[in-house]
Picture 1 (cartoon, rainbow, N blue to C red):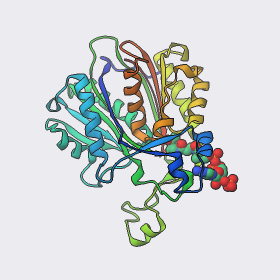
Picture 2: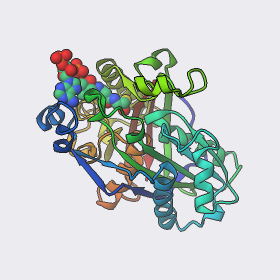
Picture 3: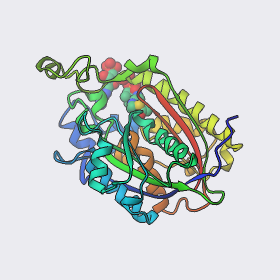
Picture 4: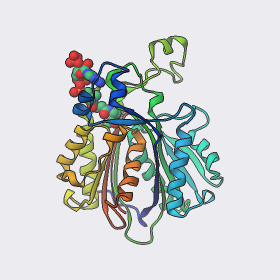
Length: 331
Ligand code: ACO
């Protein structure tokens, strides 16, 4: 068992931003050969949000971050560390985290991007936790922000139905009491990277007319393999996080799984023995927002009064890499 660091690190405020534009399954029926029925049966998704052309990951992150800071009562200048998890940075250089820092005026922070796909926000919480527990700073801002619509191949019906855009954020600080992150488990398996990836557009195969023509800069996915690994890894992550905290599924007030697909969510709930009434679901409204999915769900769940101060939550993620994470938090 991994001994958890003391003092605990708590979530002082959360925020979210969802772009206004809604893309429904009916809209997708006009774009690719698919049907609302097929998409709902296989994924549970009804609609997703799509960012404006001029709206990037940093812009969405700013909206989510400002909401989180307002709830936490924290000013931009107080942030010591700003971690931005994304698979869709606005540009390769500089980091989107630095762009966000400039937008916020968080001039006292160190800022960097974190690339762990859908698990990125949970990875980021643990990085921030370590920094704060080590006494390197007082306040952390961890954001998950994704413009998935910019890397989706809108002609590939197997992937374009799955994803949406959005951002979620949390402000973290050292706790004085018993509230905070109780346990966390993170893993990666780089040998399975090519099951969900973008073949080109990086340093090895840079962007070229040929890459654009073949759409090799866009996301490719082996759906069935991803599905199997997601179910297995999310079960492992949930197990490890619960065990580390000395908890069982019965103790959990709310499970917030990564919102990729209703069938993966159902399987994770079943494995942990947590009834569906205690599982947060918004994949029907937003699709898969990668690193933004869990912070958006956490913010909504609090706003809806499903959880509040003292509630025990279990967060579980899985994403490209592969990467996976489990975490328990007393809010
Ligand atoms: N509409 C209609 N038919 C479709 C569509 C569509 N949008 N997409 C695929 N099909 C067809 C296929 O062409 C195939 O037809 P065929 O039998 O004639 O060849 C048939 O449906 C079955 O295709 P599969 O890919 O085997 O369908 P599956 O049941 O595996 O469902 C899905 C596909 C929904 C993508 C599933 O594999 C899945 O959810 N995988 C996980 C993917 C995921 O969540 N990735 C996100 C990133 S990782 C993460 O966040 C967890």
